[in-house]
Image (cartoon, rainbow, N blue to C red):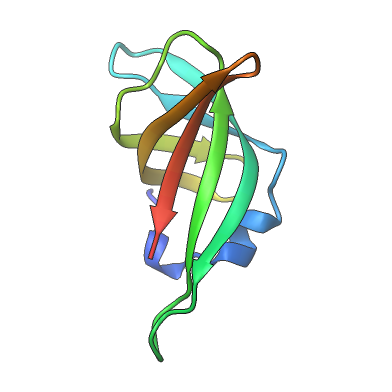
Length: 100
């Protein structure tokens, strides 16, 4: 069962910085991504959660395309998240997911 992202806050993810998420690839394989950072994006209107962004890191190959991906985390469960590859360096590919 997929977790409802609307019920998750920045603190829910901050507790798991450094942990692994397994992304399902379209070809049936999987890719391990590590949660590197959770950044605040500003204050929301009353009654709405504050925005935040996740930075996840994966290997240089294969690269996940921009789009919606199923991720599984041992504590958070199965999440469907829109990921955007935002950079590449010697540590691999950086992906960003924005929540607002």
